[in-house]
Length: 326
Image (cartoon, rainbow, N blue to C red; front, side, top):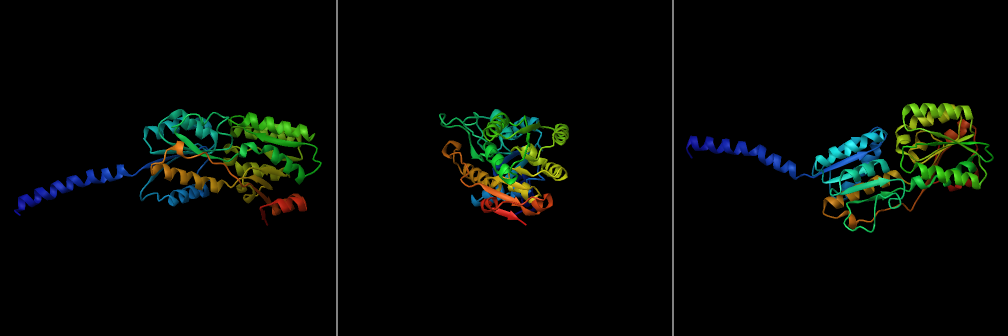
C-alpha cells in the first residue's frame, strides 16, 4: 500500500471511531431513577436496587446507565424532574419515595414504562387501572400508609395508659387524608386521645415540634411519609429530647435510634424495583407484570433507646419483635 493510501485509510478510520463509540453509547439503555427522598438516606436502598438489576443481568456502567434525580422531600420539584427524564428519552422511569414520585411520572408520560414504589393502594388512588390493558405502569406497593392503626395499637401496648398520643402527619403526602382518618377512627375505637401536628416543610416541622412540646403528649406516632424519612434524624432527635416513646414506619428509624418501627422491609422492595426494571429492559411490558405487595411485616425494637427512656418492653411485645437492637 502506498503511503498516501495508508494515511487516507488511517484518517478515515480515526474519523469513524467517535461515530462508532457514540453509536455504542446510544445503544446502552438509560434508566431514569427519580425519588422523593435524598441520596444521603437512600444509599443502602440504591444498593438494593442495583442488586435487583444485577439479578436481571444489568450492571451500571457496563450495560446500563442510571440517571438519578432527588427531590429531598420537596414534592413540588418532582414534576420538572419527571419531565426532564422523559425528554431524556429514558428506557424505563423508576420512581421511589412513594406516591409523589409515581404521580409525577404518570403525568409526565403515558408511553415510557414506569416502575413505581408507593405506600398506599395503587388502584383506589387512581395510579393504576387494571381495566386498561397496555398501561405503562407497574411496581410495588409497600402498604405502609395503610398501617397507621396497627402502629397506634403497638404504641399503646408499648406505653399502656398513655393519656395523650401525638401524631405527626404530612398534609402534602397524597395518602395523608386517609392516614389521618384511619388514625382518628382507631383512636376513637380504643378511646385514645390524640393531638395532630402537621408538617410538609422545615418551617412546618419546627412549628409542629413546638406545638407537640406545648401539648405534652406521652408518646408519638410518626405517620409514614418520604419527607419524614429525609428528616429522620431530626425527628428522632426531637423524640429523644422530649423523652417521647415513638413509633415509625421502617427499620431504618430503629437503627438510627428510634424506639420502635413497624412496616415492611424497604430494602427488599427496592431490590424488587430493580428486578422489574431489568425485566422491562429485556422486553417485558408493564401490563404483564402484576403490582406486587408485601406478605411479611417486621417489628423492630431498639432496647438501648428503651433503656434511655426508662421504658420496660413487655414480654409480649418482645415476642412479637422480628429484630431487637441491643
